Image (cartoon, rainbow, N blue to C red; front, side, top):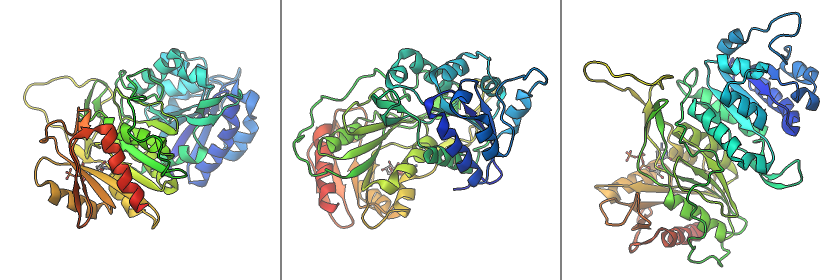
Length: 430
Ligand code: CTP
């Protein structure tokens, strides 16, 4: 993991998790980055600016002016390859989202032209509050990247969603993002209607019934599941996407959790969600965001099931403002996205199992076998939109499970039952 030569602004706001900023600075510097730290006054109550100045080897800025001199936020905003706000409190998120410029963090944020990442940390009720949700969605709609909260024990003593993501995960997400071509200076605007906040009140699949909840044959196993579409933004209001709803992947996550597994579900933008116990939800929007979380979760997983319909391409640039029409035709240049399945397949350890999906309209078996081999999968789930009631947009699916030399065909069933068929096959090879 390298951030060699990358210039990173770290904004630290006043949360109990602010102490983790020291680990973030140390990790960034260790990865080769040049770091400048901004702190809110409240953050300085939790961790001393001297600590962060020592670790970053640069003075820490706590206000736009310090009585004697004016800190040039515009310059800093232009200097950086990326800005990271971690921990981002509810207050700082709110100020960033609404342009309330009363701290060095918000001043630099408003001037920054680089990609901006924010890693919230707060109590679970604050995180779930509609005001926070709205602010997160607003920030995403400006093209900023949410580094989703973790779940667990919180400073309040309560347990739930709201923990700051692990410093090493945060650093990896930045490093992966900046390692991609076009990582620098290409914020990916997200529509305000994006559901990628991990706390939405959308239609919930929980309780639709999993066919065999009593079976505990995945107890002690950790699963990574990708689901849903990815959206690749053209400008703040337009994107390239697909019709996946994520229903199959959510059904898989819920069924696996019901069978005892601990599941990381990386879910693209969709109206559906889950609150099932045992499922940690990571809402993402683009293929690159899905890739970043997946590669972090893969090393500790026993198996991954990749049900997401990942966009193979994204626009070579995302315009900061709405694209205006001109005379004549228009061409959009697309560049390749990372292939998550192929990458996980490449890094697969002997005990790990990898399951892919193939949605094919023609030459199904041949294409599925090709993907199985190319991506180093253990088996692949083949389905086709040509089959009535199967694939995208249905609550049912009709699949064939394909290994190197064997094909097992199943009837049209509810996606919950299909999930159990897939998990039965997985349990056999785990
Ligand atoms: N996949 C992925 N990352 C991508 C593309 C696909 O993880 N960038 C995964 C899907 O989740 C699925 C499998 O790879 O499990 C096959 O996806 P598919 O889109 O059918 O494969 P492609 O390699 O994109 O094949 P093609 O576009 O040639 O059909």
